[in-house]
Amino acid sequence: MTDGAHTAERVTLARLPSGVALTTTVHTYRGAEPGPTLYVQAAQHGREINGTEVLRRFHERLPLESLSGTVIAVPVANPLTFDRVSYTTPEQLDSVHPNMNRIWPGDAEGSLHQRLAARLWEYVTAADAVVDLHTGSPDMLPHVVYREGDERSRGLAAAFGTDLLLAEGAGEDAPDEWHRRGFEGKLRVAAAEAGIPSITPELAHNKQILEDVVETGVTGLLAVCRSLELLPGAVPERDQRIARNHLGQVSADAAGLFRPTPGLAVGDEIAEGEPIGTVYDPTTYDALQEARTERGGLLYALTREATVTAGDQLASVAIPAER
Image (tube, rainbow, N blue to C red; front, top):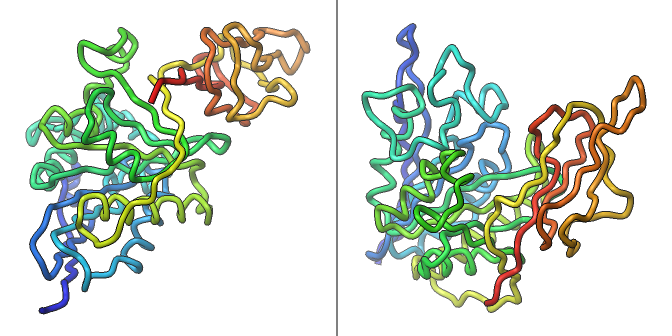
């Protein structure tokens, strides 16, 4: 039996007006034995760099000699936002679709982000499962989002191994806000529509490499590989919390400074109408908003950035679901 093989290919995703090519590297790991194909990407949003570091260490730890099948990994899916350490591209580059994770499966003749997505979509459609690595705010419970009712995607989410799993309604099962925010264009949703089970791990923090966050990502990916039988070994059973819908956000109604309620922490069970903090005018000291939850549930994200503008997300609440 021969060992597996690794190749790294520089791929052109699109071109800038000057003719400069936007490129990224696609890593392909082929096992010695046939098996399924897993597609993994990171850094659709350039400030979310822990996923990129996860793939670097996954590269170091993936035992090619034990691999059956193929893993395709893209550590920087969006070089534009990566270079800007940003969530979106500037208007000059894509005024129509500034957020890459709203336009999948893309369009080879569309806007810049649509072209990037369309090129990567060629790899996605060759896969049997998709993992789209993201990271969120500093004070957030790591979790995996999957499409509610999709048992294959739920299996991937459970295998990844975070303590919290979030089931998200999609299409006709989704609330108006889901459609209003263009979530049907997320990679995970588009892949599921194409019949490919897919998950979005949301690891905590951005802009900084955090060792425990990266380790969660690497062990999660290896466990997903075992669940797909890309690697030998069993996936351990875990005691995981399952909640529904990650659209339960508390937003700032006014700009100012935000002070969270003392003692409040992610992981707390909170009631509908419970105060989560105060937005106040830093110059007059006037309280501009007593921010409260619109529903009870599990507080899984709470901003610690004090300076907020109207519309900024202050907290996220998920509804616990039966297993």
